[in-house]
Image 1: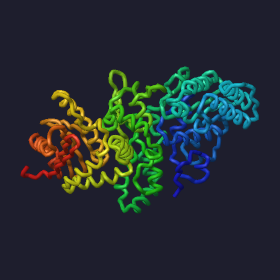
Image 2 (image 1 turned 30 degrees about the vertical axis):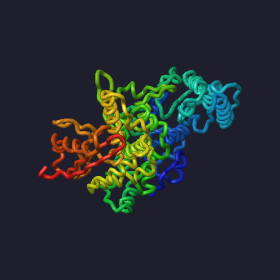
Image 3 (image 1 turned 60 degrees about the vertical axis):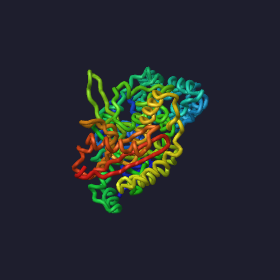
Image 4 (image 1 turned 45 degrees about the vertical axis):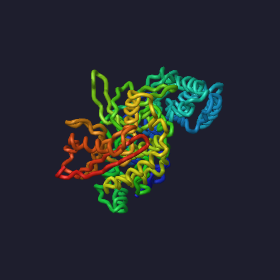
Length: 532
């Protein structure tokens, strides 16, 4: 079997040293018909490898492409000078540092072609280099810019942020003035490029294009074809059938779409899975977004990752360096993805959801930890124990673990003593809503298929948790002045009286009541029988 290219971003190394390469050159060949192109994808999604592949293509390194789609479709007699800028390797803590380090970088590029530069500033040197490369080689230059937005993201909240953006705007405007000397330009990043620093560029943004939906990430066909030997080996190691293994890989790592139709696997997580032969949160844990978790909590945005979100195209591409909008941020960083696209009044309307189990489980753990202060590394074990307690009808054990989990919940989420009845009822409603979110986050973390506030013929079900052959119908009650046992009576009675369980009579049904009375917690677990 070919080696797995974990962490390999060099196309030359990947091809020359026998690593597995999923052929993306059909999309790349189509891409080269454009002039200035922009692509946004989440971190660790193959953007740098795409940049590297294009660099080797334009340099004319024919042998690296033998056996690939593009091999007999490219004019290998044409070789172009390539300028590749990777902002992860350019210092950018201040405008002055960026200026100095970029000048050094561009002069090194010029030395490769024995070109002398006379300009003083980075932007003018960049312009000079592009023009002189064209004049000296007789071929227009190719410019490939990786992680264009890293200086912007790294300077968020810093006093230098405005100066850094000003430098980038001045630097990138060179591309417009150098059009006569440019063959092809590609810029990649995490955030969308339609910001002020690119306002003068006429770019082809392919982020949401169905033509390039699979240019990064693996399709189902590519997974089953290119990784066939790894699938068989892993299935044998885990003592699973090939079909069952494919089902779980798809559930864990598939689900990213940018056109609502073409679904791709997270490449980093997929490679790590085949390397470790163990399902885990590989992509999420390489960059746990603490700031994002805190933002979801503080802005009351937990429902954003718990339920589908509807957004139009303008909402997805909006991006302001000083005020990142929540939905674009979640979408562009990979925590939400397009699940459906519909045209409404001439505009695309997108349904966004969390892409897969890896992201969902990880987000839920970190959100639950943020709400409860319970250590995130212990939530997995606690969650499995509480799930077992539901299935074993261990209500007391479940309630004890719930108390343990909620022990450090901030006082603002618990009961205070308002001065009058109206204020007390208003606080009950507010606290119940907060506990509903906590409850939903916890249930989702357990990998159930949760349908919060599912509309039934006779009312709204708080939650229906489903697994094969099982449905748990849950009702949550909160009231500061009512005993837990009374609240539990109300919860179970409501489920029975309104027959919330009727859609699930083809399987085992468990009735779950949870009660919060101030700091007290109660639980009741019953199996539905035919006598019920």
